[in-house]
Image (cartoon, rainbow, N blue to C red; front, side):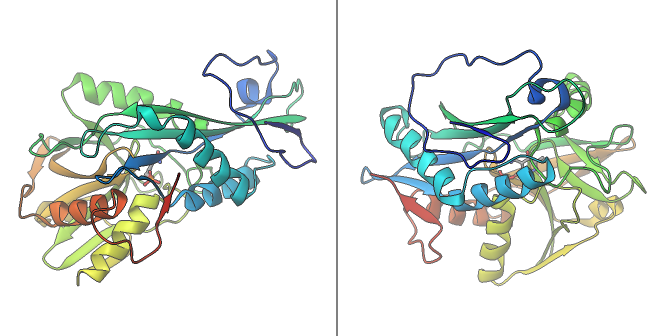
Length: 315
Ligand code: PMP
């Protein structure tokens, strides 16, 4: 669906996946007015289909749109579109444990604009693809590389919203780390280059005894919906959870490190490499990471009763 800059989006319609037409001077192409979201639909053992907190993605898109001078779909419109895409693609959703339907809502300045300014017209669309599990039972934990040259976001920038422009500048750091055999990059804060921020597409947590810590969201990290959910689950399980500044040196005596995100769910980190030092962490069946993973996936796939009202059944 499309709308002009001072209007509201109308109800969109379903169409087969295919190319879309854009003006060469589209705001998204020239001035980076683009935002995206990521959420998943799950098939349950008893054949139902569940969405996990799509209203949270809708709210995050709304906040991001405000930051990027774009109109955004309403929460209801967003959730409705995600439901319609899920229904239309039911048969592509893998059986439980085998994978999910990854859903990608996209908002962009699609109208032409030559001088710097917000585009005159906007497009909101949603597409989907079935995906396998990123984190498989018994699969190798992640090996992260702490990046010291490139930063992901700066104070006052747009690191707190999911604008496409946050991703291109870190491709170089990611490719470099992958070429050296690492799974992903762990970014530091742009000012002091000493505090943990996040990983390329997931948030980071460290565990020390009964305390679980994650970098506070001060506008330079993306506030993950998985992060928020895991914080709540961990507190329910009796852990002390702290959202605070975490110096990279705390890795020295952390028991565990793990990542959270829609794609990775809750994934264990086996090692972190920082200035030629390699820190190793506990992983495996009895880890805190595994405990939180099992609970979250249990809720997402309808195996554990959803007392929090996080899931929405689609049928
Ligand atoms: N940080 C970044 C930079 C991301 O792209 C993502 C993925 N959306 C996350 C964190 C995790 O967010 P969520 O749990 O909402 O998927």
